[in-house]
Amino acid sequence: MKIKVAVLLLALLSGCDNSAPVEKGFAGLGGEASAFTPVVPGRVFSFPADHGPHQGFRIEWWYVTANLKDDQGREFGVQWTLFRSALKAAPEVAGWGNQTIWLGHAAVTSATAHHAAERYARGGVGQAGANTAPFNAWIDDWRFSSEATDPLTDLQLSARDKHFGYQLRLVSSRPLVLQGDKGFSQKSEQGQASYYYSQPFFQASGTLEIDGKAYTVSGPAWLDREWSSQPLTADQTGWDWFSLHLNSGAQVMLYRMRQKDGAPYLTGTWIDAQGGTQLLHGDDIRLTPEDTADVAGRSMPVRWSIQIPGKHLDITTTALNPKAWMDLRIPYWEGPVRISGSQGGQGYLEMTGY
Image 1 (tube, helix red, strand yellow):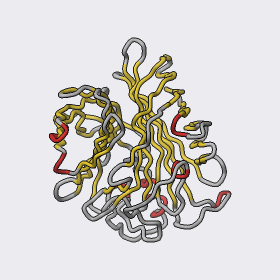
Image 2 (cartoon, helix red, strand yellow):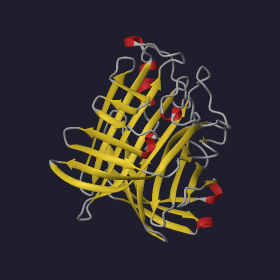
Image 3 (cartoon, rainbow, N blue to C red):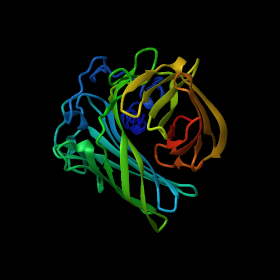
């Protein structure tokens, strides 16, 4: 659910327009997008082609999170995201006339520190992009790449900024997971949606630096790939998104899309330890904020109760660092969480629109 980049694009597109603003939902992503390719049910995914960019769609992202520990049990979180956004629904051109904006976000979190950084680039000049053969997604010197024939079996992930850096290897022999209804991930009752697949079974290992100290770390990691043209409605104000690694070996992805009026749109996917999936509907999930923290002048729900009665799951997620505020040009909360209750585990939480 990494679609904050459209805040920047909305500003770029509206900068020369003095007309009264039209309601477009959170980050402008409920705005009209009829010129772009629509998301409809029944898409047949093709790999490795779908690991690369999708021209004709307005926005997409490559998004990795990892829950890591060192040999002393100290916990860390890592995030790496690359966004591609099209300013126009037209075939891309080379050079500075290219109509694509790229944005990178990277962060490292510990129990006592959180650092985030961002990069911007114009398409068409080689500063950022994504290729499939060999797979390489990059912006400046931040990279997510593979030399493997099947690129999502063995990858390198890296980013560096003033206060942090990491170099990780991600490996998995497990199949990819199509989220939602065979990869069609609905975001509203009106039918807004994205194409969405994940690799929630990565194991990460490598080195991490934070505030001048280096650590050797390992732990589970999660990749999300989504692309869409109009994923929200005009009255959706933000979302709360979870990716959870349970100690049983099962994985859970769920999110609620908050609306100005009425109940949030709630859905998710249950992924069993063998990689089998079950679409979760709103009635299958009970998601309740339990505790808040004052973060960057906002009241953020950093402790949640999650119940999925049909799976006998009754857990609480607690932020490793409640102050995990992404203080970037497009601000939001994102950080690792611990899981307790009927099962233990770890995961990631993203909250936007607060």
